Length: 251
Image 1 (cartoon, helix red, strand yellow):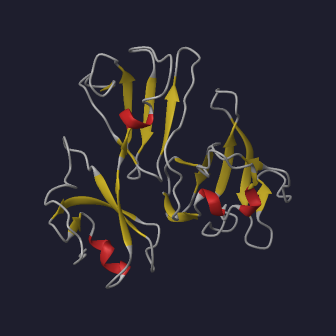
Image 2 (cartoon, rainbow, N blue to C red):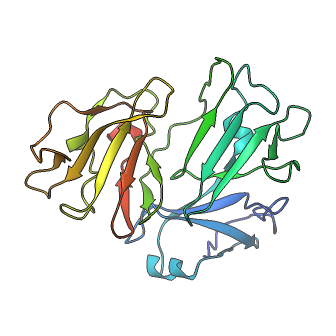
Image 3 (cartoon, rainbow, N blue to C red):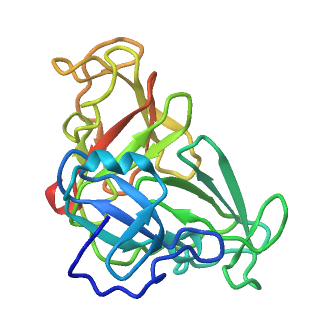
């Protein structure tokens, strides 16, 4: 992707320690909301590692953003205990990676299998689970995203999604555009019980645009199932698709 007026430093957006450090976010056209990892850059161009970006058209608008890593996301979490607390990251390709807390390392985390110091990119569309042995606080800080995000929903995999709106009021699940690309009477969602047990409630089946989400057992329309700004929802899809998520201030 080219930007003739740019004055970037060559290599400024290159991967660091084997992890992508920046990504291109398309903000107009058919791929609006899609993200692409930067693999290299010159003073006026960036190269991404996914050929599908060609579908964005000849001159889409785009942003270059720094990735958030696991070490960044949990920097403000309190009362974490070494080798007792764990993060599980669910990747879009179906793989699952786990990390253990180790405050003696630069990143604060080690790979749960190799016990080597490690870190991971946490994409805007990605979910993870933090399991702790003691109570603590997890404070999210930063700037609200003002652009759309395309969230991949992969068939046969765990899809943990959320509105990602730290200040937003709860929204009726029928009104958050989650069903727009779901298959009628095939795709399901469930909400997490908000008590730390990771249990689920509100098993729902998508019944099409006319009926929306239905109770998965009785097939009756549901009302009053609200999703908070930071409450996770589990989505199971029969075919891989996406959820086009509006920015927090437009939800």
